[in-house]
Length: 257
Image 1 (cartoon, helix red, strand yellow):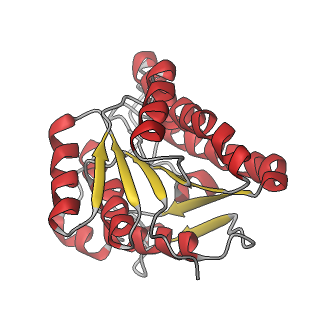
Image 2: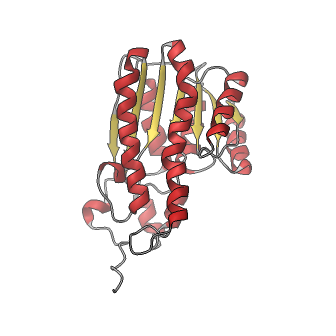
């Protein structure tokens, strides 16, 4: 198993949910962790949690949809912590108006810029140093909705996550010769704040049966600990009580025409 002590990890969307749990877990294994997200206050909370446990964290506020800001953030991390060896692309959004009967083009643009462009921008920012070092792990948090079509996830979210899987596959095709490996993790429902965007509210009882952020953190650690010769291309993970199998109750009826 690979030791993470001394590694530099960059986690986007690190202020809450999956990103925060992943950042804390990586720091707990000895990695120095750069934390990015749009909300400085929650990044500071994550950094404080890591530092209280004896870890090393650097808050780097960032809207991943901003190409130049992503480039500058990668430069700042390199200067303060060293070359990024592990990139976890977790930042993502969904929208309330998510179906063809209520399209909102502004929301579409915002989602695609974050969920797809943002992933591309951060990867492009760290690839040169990874190539130079002959090593690197990129973990892209995709979705069950990227592997299977999902009405619940909505048009834009599903399209963006399908695209992330294609992007992840292309990374392995082109960058394996440089010692770089990419893993797309495709979780079904996870109890995170993104559920609050659902058109139909999700009960607390249902949330307790879903995957939890810590489950995804353990999944990322599994991938990160593997020797560099091993590439886990994709992981599909769901709650045991998978509502996509059981019959999800939060699909609203189709609107009347």
